[in-house]
Structure formats: structure tokens, C-alpha cells
Length: 298
Length: 248
Ligand SMILES: Nc1ncnc2c1ncn2[C@@H]1O[C@H](COP(=O)(O)OP(=O)(O)OP(=O)(O)O)[C@@H](O)[C@H]1O
Ligand SMILES: [Mg+2]
Image (cartoon, rainbow over all chains, first blue to last red; front, side, top):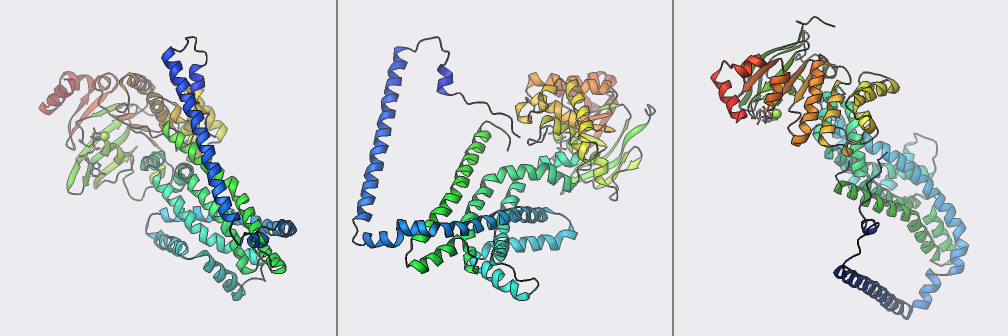
């Protein structure tokens, strides 16, 4: 999609193929920089070790450590509970995938509805604005309870699994956030882009789809990924509806063994799950900042 | 091909105000097919406003815009259909940064005129080739110099064979050494018979390429005439004053 970027001149590239030998003054400067570099590596290593020892001795030396280790960090309990928690995590992942797709679609839809001009669209605009205001203010756990226990009570549908209502609740809440992110992106596209598209004869809808939205999405990709990370952990809240996900599985295991290690296992698994996205978000953000600095697109 | 005397654009009594300030005080102007008209005048005289009014991106408060006899300023016309018949190029090119150079040129053909991609791209590549930029077809606009970007923007505007091409000071954002290549392109379009209305600060270019020159000052047409006569022998005192100021 994007053209290859020019490699920024690295020091190695600058000196490679340099036939001229560096001057004495330059050699002396390089030796100084090298010694500074070695020193700072040593200092950071030392300070890390000191901090680790300090923290370790405080925790491990505390009077209750033995007890805490038994109830929270018991390797045997961890191993025994792992299969069930993993099974639960699979449910979380499924809900996450469905909810993400739905959130992307609804978020974009609502953001687009809010850009519509003209009196016919007035009620639609108001509804879309009201929706984002309401669901950004409402705690997710309350949405979960209302959707998970309220809507089934209306008996529109067959009995649906708790994970289904969890997916709906997550979608409702996160679509509101994501719609606002998209809207910010749409507003960040310069009006001259829309003018250029309209002057070519593209309709409002065509201009949005072909010109404004593609640029808007690029602009807000880091923010969207951040919301995705937040959703990756909030997906654990569907356990309040009784869905047997990783959190619920850990709860069951805990109740059976009177040991909290399964919660720690579930927590670690959630961290592992979100870690790649977090790193990817950092990478995308850094790359976009670099592009902006060379005056690239988006 | 239409008769040479056929009128492409007629403006009758165009008025436009921003708040209390009227910037167009009733403009009358006719442009015949294949005619190249240069719109000159001091900064703020209303050149851009007039071009946008023709393109229907600026509402007007009074008057009529006729495109081949059809009243396009009527609120009942489909503005998208009208804009698709008129090309407009801006001072700051406004290429789409997320689309390749070729996609920029072919977007309107595909989306508005319903050409198949292969067909649109064949024509797009021909156009890019004619300005020596075929090698950049798959590049993104930010790879191109200002002059190259502006030439691509002109190709984007003419890719759909518009009946009228509007150019709004297309060289004034360019470094001096890049102006020539853009003017050369406009000259070749003019020679190929494109009907052009262009706002410009390039007096030499206007004299050489335009058939007719129109001086706009404070929202009024001060003088309009064949290029040679307009520059050699202006009738109005205001024209003489303006020309001596820009000639320095
Ligand atoms: N959207 C607007 N709102 C208010 N005033 C405007 C607007 N657009 C233009 N004007 C005013 O209208 C007048 C004419 O502007 P216009 O851009 O048409 O001039 P121009 O002849 O193109 O000038 P230049 O040579 O600097 O491009 C100016 O005084 C300008 O300030
Ligand atoms: Mg202007």
C-alpha cells in the first residue's frame, strides 16, 4: 500500500565507503562517545539490579510471604487450572473477534451518520449524537447487566448464550467510543480534500467513501488500536453474565481449591493476549510519526 | 466537434456577497468553445470566487450561469452531474495523498463516469505518459515535486474530458523554476482546443496563450478584449494602471 520509505541516513551509511581517514580530533571524539555509551549501559544495568533486589527483599522478606505464595503463586494449582482457563479464554477470544468486527462497522456507521447535512437527516444526527453521549457515559458493567438480563426478559428471541449478550453489550459501549475516534479523524481531513473530490463530480457519499474516510482511518489508527487493547481486557467482564470465560473459569477453580492462583493465571493470559497489540500500536504510532516528519502522507 | 462560435459558458449578472461585503457586482462573461480566457486582477478582486461560482462550489446571490445554454445555477439541477462536466484545478493542487498518482487521475472516470478500471487506467497512463510521468503511476503524490503534482492535478481534471477547464492560479504556489513546466502543459492543452478559463498572475503567459483577457477589479469586469490588443492598447485607465503595476 505505501511506497518504500527512504532509509534515514544511519551513521554506518555515512561512513561506509568513506575513503578519507577520520581526523585525529574525530577519532578522539568517537573514543569519548564510546566510553560514555559503555558507562550508561553499566549504570542502567546496576540500577536495575539494585531495584530488583530491593523490591524482592521487601516482598520475599515480608512476614506473610509464605502464605501469599501458597494462595496466589502455587505452581501445582496453576498447572491444574490452566486447561480450564484456556478453554474459557477461547470464549473471550471469540467474543473479542465478533465484537471487534461489529464495533468497526457500527462505529464507522455512526460517525458517518453524524456528518450528514441537510434537514432530512436531523433526527438521525440527533440520535447518533445521543447514542455516543449515552454509551460513553454508561459504565460497561451496567450495560452488561441491562443487556444481559434485560433484553432476554423481553423474550424477542430464543434463549441465547450469555456470551451473545456480552458481545452485544461490548459492541454498544465500544461503538460509541470508536465512533468518536472516527469522527475526530473525519474532521482532521482538510476541507480542500472534500472540495477537490466534489469538484470532480463525486457525490457526498462517494467523496466520503473514496477520499475522506480512507484518510480519516489512517489518521486515527493508533487511537483505534488503543481502544482495541482496552476491549481485549474488558471482554473478561462478560463473566458477570455467567458466561464461562477465562475469568469465570478461574473463579470456579478458585472456589474448588480455595486458592487464588487461577486468577493470577487468567490475569497473565490476558496480559499475554494484549501484549502483541500493544507493541504493534507502539510500532504503528512511531512509524506514523516518522512519516509525518518526512512530510509523508497521513 | 462543435461549431467554433458555440458558446460554452455564459455568465449573466453574477452577484456574490460575504456578509455585508459584495465581492462580485454583477459579472457578465461569455466563453466560446476552444477559447482560452485569462482572468486577471488584483488580489481580492474576486477571481477565485467567480471560478468557484462557475463550478457551483460557491453559491451565488443573483445571476445566471449557463453551461452550453443550460442554466446550471438553477437550484433544481444536479450539481454533481454539472461538476463532472467542468474541470477545476486549484493553486495547491489538492491531490489525494492516500491514492497513487494513477488512481488520482482515474478516480472520477471510474466512480463518476462508470468506466471499467482497465479502460480508465489505459487512458490515465496515456495522460501521464504525455506529461512524462508514467514512471510515477504507482507512486504516491508526496514523491512528486510541486510542478509534477500540479501537472498531475491538471491531468486529473481533464481525464474525464470536461467541456470547460477552470484553472485558479495554478502556478502561484510553485517555485519559480517549476512554473515553466506547468505553463507548457497548459499551452499544449490550449493548442489542443481545450476551452479554458484561468485566473493568473502570469501576464506574459496570458499574453501569449490566452485568446482573450478579462480584467476584474473589486468585483467588476473593467475591461475585456483580445490578448494582443488588451496588453498593447488597453482602453481603460484602470487597466493601464494595473498593467504598469504588475509589469513593474
Ligand atoms: N468564504 C469567504 N468568506 C468571506 N469573505 C470571503 C470568502 N471568500 C472570499 N472572500 C473575500 O472575497 C474577496 C474576493 O476573494 P477572492 O478569493 O475571489 O479573490 P481573488 O481575486 O481570487 O484574490 P487572489 O488573487 O488573492 O487569489 C476577498 O476580499 C476575500 O476576502
Ligand atoms: Mg484567488
